[in-house]
Structures are given as structure tokens and as C-alpha cells.
Image (tube, rainbow, N blue to C red; front, side, top):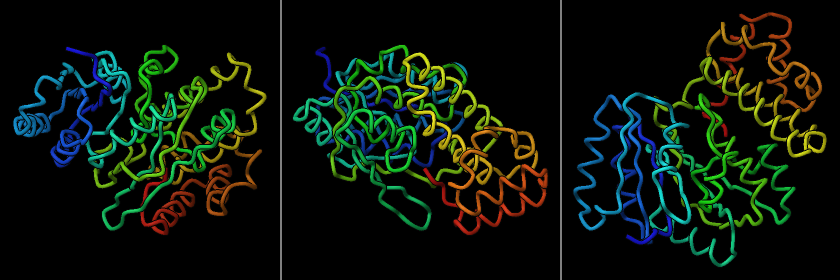
Length: 330
């Protein structure tokens, strides 16, 4: 069988309420030369049963579907590595199994990638909350190093992989693999390195991906000790990457600012007094250096934690989340 133009990778874990919609959106793509790689990360619900039932409705694409089953749950990062190893497409698209895509997404991204000779092609996306849907723009500029800088800052350039079509060669690089144990920030780990290595990043000004914020079982829906530890792991690895490539001084201020903002976000989005207390030391130097740049609510929360007023900080954190209507911020 000839090499497909695009491989779509879909890690699956307990997404019974969403997998059917996701699968239909994949199998109904207007672009035909696609290989589909599903990795069942030891789901305990009926996600795989529902997926098989959807697949049976599309007999013409049987031979283009691969299903791999993990014997134990390994996390989304390792599941993604498994899917990469099993795929063969010239370009790779990643879709989360609780999300879905527009019917023309792959066609539009692939056509843009070819016309611009791009290593990475980016589109905009919808964020779907229970009571609202918003469009999020993913901004790309012409200068390679400004793109890399913006990827560090995470202002209007986003580290998600699922709204991007990427040449396979970048996923095969050792530096772009998901390290063991990194199950949050794994997209950021990969795409920040891809932005460094890519020669051409192209932007398609169309909104084609639907990012679902209804899934209460999603790994991003709550903040646990794993999130804090993964943030520490991510930044240790990224600091090493910058040093290795002689970029640590060039981007020191951007890294410092992003660490401070990331700490504030973690503290606001956890509901655990113990976690706030345990990780109040995190990025303390960066917090102090960028304190004035943070929002007023973030500054007050971090000030309370620094003064070990953890109970008051937790109450204030609840107020901030309520004010933001509990909506997750990228």
C-alpha cells in the first residue's frame, strides 16, 4: 500500500461521550489520502466499542485504519509516541478524542502546506464551553525567531498540536519526542522544539478545529500534583534545550515572564490548599522579577501565598475562578 499523504493520530482514554462525534468528523474528511491511527490507552469505559461501531459504517476506509491497544494506561504522551511509531504519512495531524474537526480541515491544511512549502501549517480553532463557543486565533509571523519567542510567551501563539499539520520528519526527531512521565505540557514540549527546527511556518486564516471543554474527565479539567510536577519537568527540559542551542540568554526574559505567569495560572486553577502550600516556592525568583507584569488578582494571590496566608489565598482563588466563570484559559 502506498504511503498516505497524512496520518491522523488519536490517543483514546475514557471518552465514551465524545468518541463517536470525533470519529465521524475524521472519516468524513473531504481529503481522502489519510491514514487513521487510534491508540487505546487502556480505556475502562466503552469508548472502543463505540469507535468500532462507527468504523463499521465506513467499510471503504477499513484498510486505512490502525488500532493499537496498550496493555496498561501509559498516559497521553506515551500514547502519542505509540501512534507516531505506527504511522506512515508524509504529514501528521493530531486530534484529541474528545474533540472534532471540520470536514475540510485536512484538505485546507494540506493544500496550504504544499502551496507555501511549509514545514508546519496552522489554523484557528473554536473553544467549546458548556454555555458558549469562542474563536481563538493562532498568530504566526514571518520571522522564525519571533515565532519561537511568541511560542515561549504563549500570548497569541498557542502550543497545541491539534490545530497544526506538521511534516513527519519533525515528529521523528528525538528532541521532539514526548519524554516519559510528561502527560501535561507534552504538546508544548513538542511544538516549541518544532518551531525552533522548522524553516517555514504557514498560517491558514480559517477556523477548523473544535476544542472541547465539556469533558470533566479530561486531564486538563482539574489541577493535581501531576500538573505541578509536569510543569517543573517541562521547564527543566526546556531550559536544557535553550542552553544546548545557545539561546538561554537571548530568551531569558521571555522564559522568566512565562514561568511567573504559569505559576499564577496553576495556583488559580487548583482547588487544593495542600498543593498551593506545597508548590508556593515554585519559580519564586521569576515571580518576584515579573510581579508588576501580572494581573492584580494574580499578584494578590501570589502575595498571600508568599506570606504563607494559604487559607486566605484559597478563598481568594475561589473568587477569581467564580469571576472567570470557571473557564479554562489556554
